[in-house]
Length: 460
Image 1: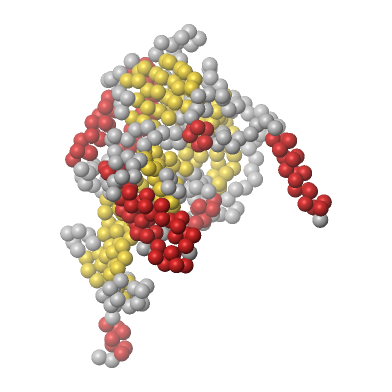
Image 2: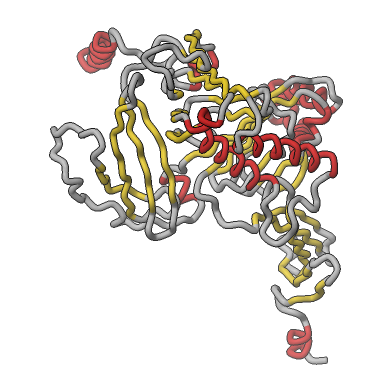
């Protein structure tokens, strides 16, 4: 065979080599980045319970025997980024499934260790920690000779990681931050309080550029909102503000309306709709100064009419109910001005979408039987509450005192509502940025800083 014939016979990278009809796995020729010969990459599309579709990739080169495994999201970039926090308390938490996209950042918050962006992984909490441990410990001998200071600094960290992997380092906190919204830590029905938290957030312009979402340089035009600069916002009147869509970066409009809630305060309702990509969002903002204390509102839902009460849940508010075994952390769902029934429906729909709603299969087929039964009981109870078939108590806990439940007896006292002020914790103060906020004496600090900057110039 001639050299030309050999070249024709050798398959090009990307050619389909094999397809397994039973598993759906496909194998293609692909270039080995180690020896630059052709190896083989096997792709398998799988559906993960509680999450979405992902593609597993496994590469192997028969020439140099190089192997590599990774995971890719089979879904589009989500409208918002997401960040998860989990307090790992036992061996069961170590075995929670984790999906890391190649743009996500995993942190061991308790130890101040960060695994930067890199290859995607389908693994467990233990698997991610073990990879961090292996990466740090594998080069310690080299560091001992070339960088003894770094070696000494890493010794206690590696020892702590080793204790965690041996099941002796509980509890500790981890986080997983993904601007694409395609990473995930598995929840359980026992999660409560601050143990497991998920928060969605709007990406910054820089994060969109990192994800390769190109923006329109002429996206935001200086358009008139039909309001003079010094004109006050009128109750009930709708205003439109030109903005940049956080999902596609093209021009869109943010609509806002001021609403005066009796016996509460003025709030601004915000709604965004992008005609280019279909992105939609809504939010509620309250005005006024930062209160000295947080507020806890407890409502006893006893009759069907209670489900129709207006309820304002700000984005800093947590919601929980022992009877329904549900807890919504601050940031989840954003700010909402709706009814009790509407809020419970949103909670149910969001959870059900994460856990059961898969596009092409029956609900939860690959879910463990025990977990599936627990979630089914949970949703059955939530459906009964929405339908007015059971009594329950819900509590709104808002460190900014910006949430509200309609009082049906105002101005008289409503016996089904209990309101109490509480002192914010240090953690809440930190999360709200109040520890760094200075509202008095900042002018003197600014003058003092200015004088200190001028002194070196005068000495020169």
